[in-house]
Length: 176
Image (cartoon, rainbow, N blue to C red; front, top):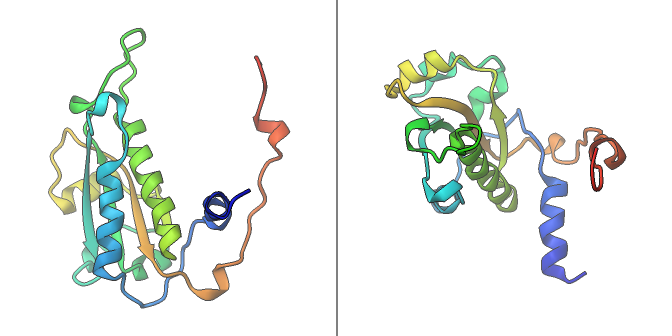
């Protein structure tokens, strides 16, 4: 395996949810690169049915009250990710709206890029979507997919590993 390919796979071996962050801010150029990844993500029929709000630590006290875990409050950056179902591609045969899928793709790609930058992330779904929308002044038609916190991880978390299911439990070949 060549080095570039090895680096790619090691990125996903290193990726994990981080819930405790150092006080080090995320540099502007790093944050800019991560936001460009959101912008370049693929979406069904290139509809890009998403909106993202960057909330930096300064002046975030009221927003921090929405988090259930204390560690999230220390993250230098939070990004609220919203799906716009009205702008999304809809699969014709069953009417499935792809807004959430598209937002998830964009956020997942950004999380991979953050890992490459040494920035820890945690996707937060355990948050009140109505309260988030009210605090951020978000139009009613948009749906909160999640809040992603970003920051440099506390060093004791870098090598922590959680167990994964064996491939045999989750992958089948040919049919069920």
